[in-house]
Each structure stands twice: as structure tokens, then as C-alpha cells.
Image 1 (cartoon, rainbow, N blue to C red):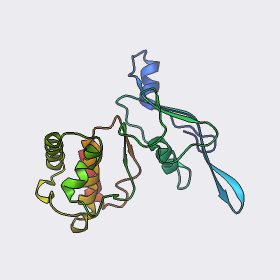
Image 2 (image 1 turned 180 degrees about the vertical axis):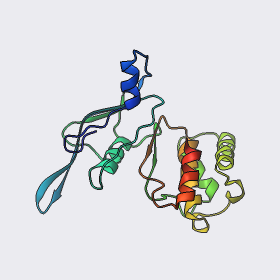
Image 3 (image 1 turned 135 degrees about the horizontal axis):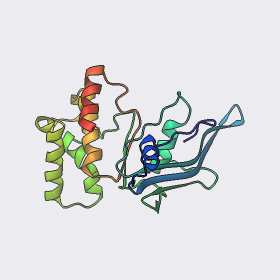
Image 4 (image 1 turned 120 degrees about the vertical axis):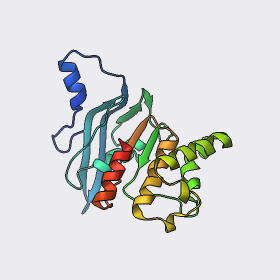
Length: 203
């Protein structure tokens, strides 16, 4: 990814190539992805990605100052907004045309359904895919236990702390097993202790 003329590369893939090691298949590939907004009547290019790829099993962090296009790039990969100028996003070779179950997104905000219980929020992605009820219940139970939320399964988001809400959001995105997990500073609003715990749970 480039902001201005900077480029973010996969250090792991680069090192593997230098050592002559075999690397895994490309899970995500972006090419010629651009986004332009208008400011004071003038076009403002905030994102210009010539080529970006992530291989299966890699964990990539995109770093840059506020407003450089990090969130915009993630939203384009997620299929929530469109690239301009004919750019393309591919997940395991398949062109991305909109949101899909192959990509899971954790937003900066909690993004939970306030009318659904903890268990209902975690089950949502599986329900939209038509997964059998018995399988949904088993999967929801598994991830609620993983996040230490089993005893709160019948609670609503308004009854939870910020850290608990983020654990629900993480359980929800992991439950439907996306091929690519996108995370837009999801722990930025948490206190240091909760943030460290969440990072350990994710890894």
C-alpha cells in the first residue's frame, strides 16, 4: 500500500523469498486501488495502491498517520465502498464485488446489534449463511467460551462493558470462519489492560 509514494510490503514473504523458501498461496491481492474525495471543491486523492498482496497465514499491519487512507483501504477490501479507476480486489483469485462471507471485518466501533443478545450477535453471520441451527448453537457456544462470555449469552450489548462488547464482536467475526480477517483499530478505544487481553486472545 502506498500513501504518497510509500509502500507497505510483507516482510515475512520478502524474507522467505531471500532465503529461497516456499511461501503460501496469495490470499488477498489488490491492484490499482484508488479513492478520491472532494475538499473545498477540489479532488483530494487519499489512497493510491498500485499493488498489495497478503499470503495465506500472514498477519499484516498497515501503519500511517490519520487520514492517509488506512480505513478506506480496509473498507474497499471488505466491499463496503468502491475503488475508483478500475482497480481490483481479489480473495483467493475471486474478484470482490461487495461484502461477502469470505471476509470478516472488525470495525473501530463495536458495531453490535442492540436488539440482539450476545448469543444472537455471534450467531448472526451463521444465520445469514443458512447454517443449520444445531451447528450454529455449537459454534456460538464454542466462541463464547473462548471469549469468557458464556454466562453473558443472554445479555444485551447495553448491559456490557466496552471490552466485553469487543469480545462479542471478535467472537462474531471468528464464528463464521472468514478466509480473510480485516481489523480497523478495533482495540483503540479500550484501556491498556483490556487491549492487551484482547490482543492475546486474537493471536
